[in-house]
Image (cartoon, rainbow, N blue to C red; front, side, top):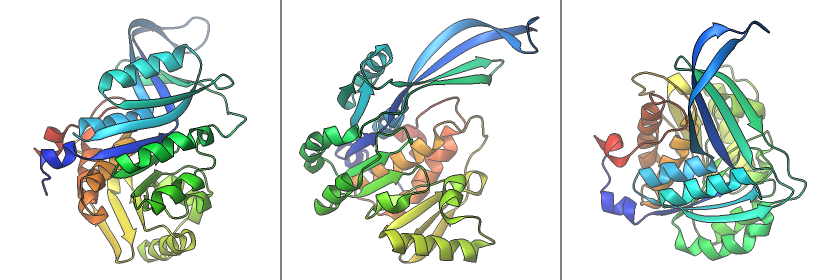
Length: 309
């Protein structure tokens, strides 16, 4: 199904969650180090991209919808780089700053067209950071047709139940990319989008599709979650809701890099729901977008033209 560009242009998604700066160092690998059995990478190019919830918001934007980003970062060089990057895209930014927080940076070293090493620079905040942004959240909520919580387990969304309750009261659809095994804090969400490994953390292994269906529907009922979208990489995805379940086969022509594919899937779901589609109508489009983005390198996005060509 195709959705008019204007419908998306009028759709606004509020993205709330953990952001990070994705750094890429590209280089030539011509020899092995004499100090240890590791490749020596001579860096020839550096690149910086939006990461985490910032990449999710950017995915919303490239599809043709409008995005606002509410987050908390450190008061450091990485946060200023990230804020400039995000602002340049046209995303409306609402950055809170906390001096105790170190802005998350993921540095990937690339040689011969493949990732050789990833280094993460981060710390876990001592306090509930996004709680300080509740007033801004309340103010922004009525201006948006969907709210997307992007949880990377970095501590920013440790207590999101208050925000979920406010979004429910305002009848704004709530989409959540979950982390960890405690789904009680996602109580009342419209849809959550775990991958296989994330879901196994919560419901354990399943023997077959019938067992999976039983366990997922019990989980939904327990936490009053309207729907669960399970992303299954090469097996596509399955949406579980009150009407049962519906699946879509994977559409990747060539899998080059799965980095950020989950970001693209939930961003597409949010943009389509904000534009007026049901979850069942949005799911095949999210599946197609995920198939396109795994054919690209690094944290990438999908355009309206690519999705509907």
